[in-house]
Image (cartoon, rainbow, N blue to C red; front, side, top):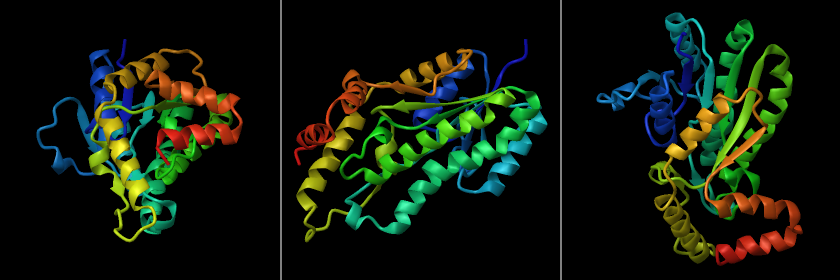
Length: 269
């Protein structure tokens, strides 16, 4: 039996690296992506391709190379993403565009690049790694929530458009996991004269603590493996702490203002 071929964007670190290592251990032929190959000269866990999800030309070149070598692609995992924090009022618009370019436009560029191949194969799976934060507008993380929430919605539409071609698409929303996302995240500066100085500073500290104490990203990898081996994947999956997943249930059943109050109490606002 031939190995199934998997491509994981943002595969050089964090959740993407864990997914790649786990799937390789299960017999998959794994390719990861990174924006700069020369930044990872000693990476040996699986093969990396140089690819920038913000650049369709870069994507086209990498996908062509992969198809030349393997002849097919069974699973695309759109994992590459960046964090962004800050008061809505004070976050530079250029940084907002960068976040959406990676977190929203990137998976769309990737999906457009691989769908012709998956249609030809009459099978394929795309897993978009979103976030539990994408289900709610979180204070000082509004643009991150918005970019991931937008991806959740466009995935709902896209999966209906391509289902007739034998292609499945689903969302997987992780909670907080112990990765290096905080170090690569854009933080709007805490301005000494800002009216948001104290609440934003406290919230930022809390966010970083959640990541530092997060669960093992291998749990996300195990969920990815489960989805790959599911004949008809669901529209949405979540993985993370019980209370983070439970918060989504509360959002469904509680009045908006009650849920808002819970969030404000949690963040001490």
